[in-house]
Image (cartoon, rainbow over all chains, first blue to last red; front, top):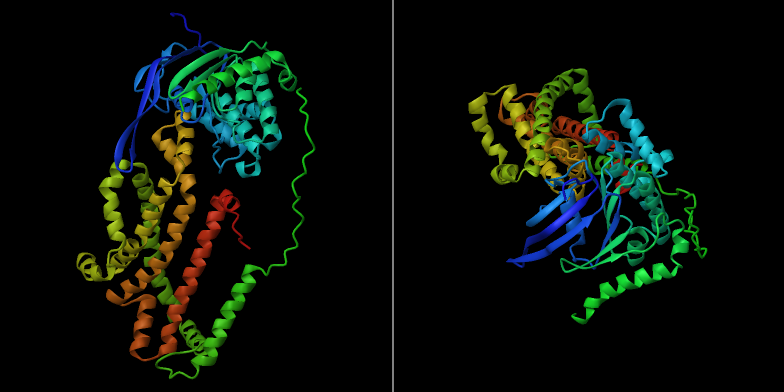
Length: 264
Length: 275
């Protein structure tokens, strides 16, 4: 691998160990055990697994918020050292700054990147428009619904024009209908912007609907990688749910998730 | 566009425009204050005027002090020391609290002194401060500062520790420097705690001011209290006491007003009733 395209992500032999103090005793928890995967430019990969399987840890290592205990992480061929503008993170609960308006929240990331002046507000408004929130630009987070907050979160991450969008269960706290709407919108945005997306979820349907490839994780390791044979663009996600391909892929992921249950 | 089949769910119970039949808070406060003053007036008159006083006698004493110009002169004198000491405690306390809260090293190195100093029996140290700084203005401002600064530092420090880790990570994810995170994320997130500290410091600062006026060169409102007490003129003694209480209450309301100006989102978040 010499000429890596900018949106390419790779984790090779990555392990992560945490030390915890439980009732005065030091315990080590192995969150990741030599995880390997590659993500191609413009690919959507979902990481799925039960809580504690290491999917969020993997995402945080990719973002640079955690460092791997062992192994190599590269984005666009360059090794990851801390956070960078080549990656944008969408948080689980949006995590908007409550004292800023929607537009100012989007501007925050852009300002950090060094953008100033008129371009700053214009860019922020353009990305708010992209997520359908132009009219709510001057509202503060407490005046936004959960779905709207997460849209701002997506706009904030996209505005800095990263190569890779990292998403940590962003729709997990939303009601089912809002979630479905946002899933459709995310796919539309991805079709337009061609970002690589790594999406952590614990929702089986979501994993299948969004992904080109699903990585099923369990106890810090990759249990199985499943290619989703659905065409892109996905079009009507509601109709897609009724297809045999969807049911088939969903069942394969379900089996992978449950194959371990005999052990428990 | 995807069409999602939905069973028409019952729409959320709409917020009917509530007829606010509640009595406004300021009315309740006014009534409660009037009641206390009235009761004091009625029962206070039966007490020997050396041992106690009552509102109308205090009002007369107040008027005399105003007319003679003594009250205004004393108030200005006291407030100068208060403003300098209190102002410094905010200017130094807030940044210090922010730094201690953000730095593991400073927290371990300085935190223990702050916690200890908060409980320091300052009155015992006033004579020592007088030896260092004399009897004048400097020592008074210093006593106010020492009483006011620690609640501000401690509150700010606690506030920083209560900032959600994920908000810090928002800054990190956009490659913000530590200083930028402190200024753009930690500081605004900590404002409610800072304001609480600043409010607590008002009361402590006022007490410190009077203590300073008792134990150093007798001056300002403290002087009126001492002189009146020595002359067994209890009504007159109560005038500065009440002036200070009113002043502190007004200052607190002012800080609250500033808080609503600089952090309007906070009021919305907590849903506090400010009416």
